[in-house]
Length: 153
Image 1: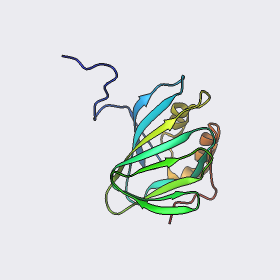
Image 2: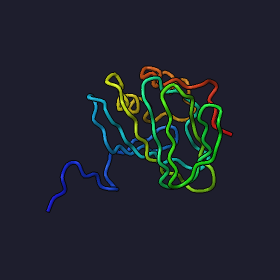
Image 3: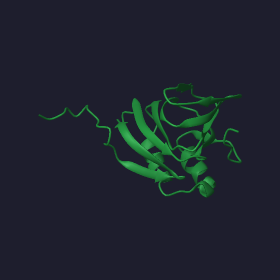
Image 4: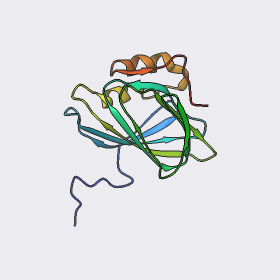
């Protein structure tokens, strides 16, 4: 018996690494660009600095771990089973709290001009110290980071 191509096993997906985190691709339907999902694996203290998606709405579901999240001016704690909706144009970012690695399921509602696979491939191998390069690569996809980089406190 074989599974249909629409089935994605828990251990399936290409893994790429950047800024001290891993990203595991799950659903990628570029270049059509309607939906993108991936799991981000981040160690304690890591995270994604405050930024704005100008084209896409973004959603997360926390599979494991805990985060300090900022959405607009609101700062709050997020844990396993929690979901956060980040509408396009609203600043957001997170920092992994506690002593457990976080696994976070991301879903992005894509616009036809969005090129997230290309953007993330441009980030491969970059470290948090390479922030200027991160800003440049992401800016080409209308993802704007606040500078200097800021993680939610």
